[in-house]
Image (tube, rainbow, N blue to C red; front, side, top):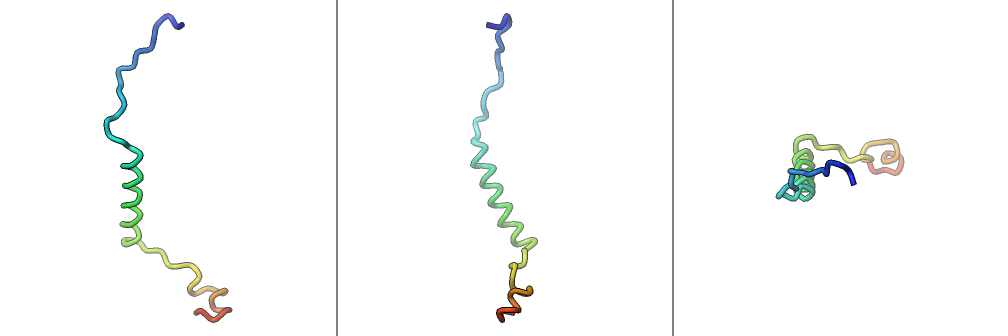
Length: 54
């Protein structure tokens, strides 16, 4: 046993951080899809032109 026991005065947080961070990530991804939408890959590339999609 150590000569000086470690006593922690910090307590765990009362708010559940994993669900808050997960929800924030989902909301951020939805917002980014409206602010900076990404084009759908494969709509106007060589493979799509080869099979006649574009």
